[in-house]
Image 1 (cartoon, rainbow over the protein chains, first blue to last red):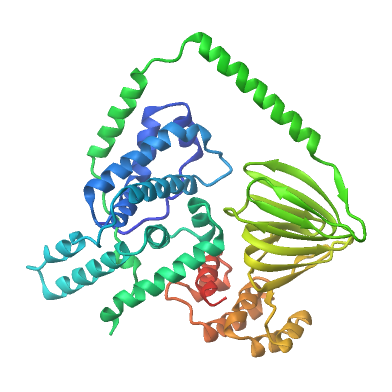
Image 2: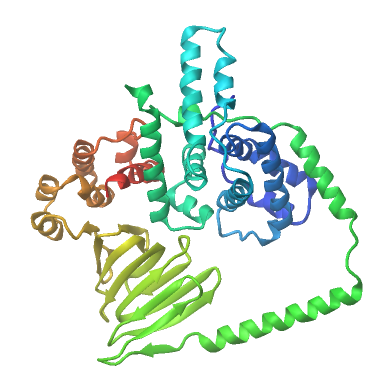
Length: 188
Length: 269
């Protein structure tokens, strides 16, 4: 696992232009630039379910390839891409039965049980944080992931979520209260 | 506890690209529609574009002037409406799906917009009100002096390199040739508002509440460089900044640091 590197968040305009012309290698380069971030958001959004995250990532990039001609250069590419991510994740969440926060994150913590005690405690904390995020309602969950996973600004998030900045602030505020409540045992 | 630390990047499996390529190839194998259909689509598309362009040209650039006892409501696409008050001169300069733009020469408007940021703009002599999804009133005299008052959401008022971000419950004076002033909450203590009006930094800092960090945050980039540290320290005393907000970077007016700090402070606004 790697730390998120935000230095290359925006795709090069030349690369996008090549994608518009249907250059398959350019698509691959664009995919390589964003795949881990898109996959990670889907992975945490879908409770650590790697199979659904994989399908969602595939759908996002297929939509991107099909619609890149509609992307307007004056907008930030990442905002446009995240709008696709939001649509795919929320559509998929709507079509699935509500499910409790998965045990996948818990299993991840147990997998390191044979390492040092400190490592286990850290993995356990991480698993609890991810499970708490996974238990948020979908619209709140995606906002938290975009904010804390990729450091999008309120304005970028509002554009991706197609809502006002006030709504973004309100969803984040309510999400934080819910997370604080669920994670208070870790702080106490 | 830092949530971000517990959300490391997860590498996407290589197999995803293989399925994307397979889907693309399957799509490419599908046949194109016949030449006749393509021609029919092209004629239809050209007619629609021509019709839309004609409508836009015909409906734009006409000034609307309301009388002393009159008003009207403009519908802004499907994202909201604008009430135009008495003695107001306004015109529509853009009316597209991706951009609605009014020009307010003088008078008063009240906008109710429900949309993602930067779809609705109001141009004035003294800058542009940029909707970030909100409800707000804007008054402007013929010289370009005005007042922006936000009831819901956020509005950004921009002039040259200057920007004031005004949240619900706050207002911002606009000066002719000077752009937006420092925004402040309507419920701020009178002493604070007067000190802000008179540019009395000492009293502004002394009388600020936690919520007034809205004004103090805007002051950081507008006071003399020698005063920035005092403003930073006062904000930090009222609402301690997160660890990743560097004092040094904030005093250098690093845009990313200031943006992140503002979004943290916004929890208290």
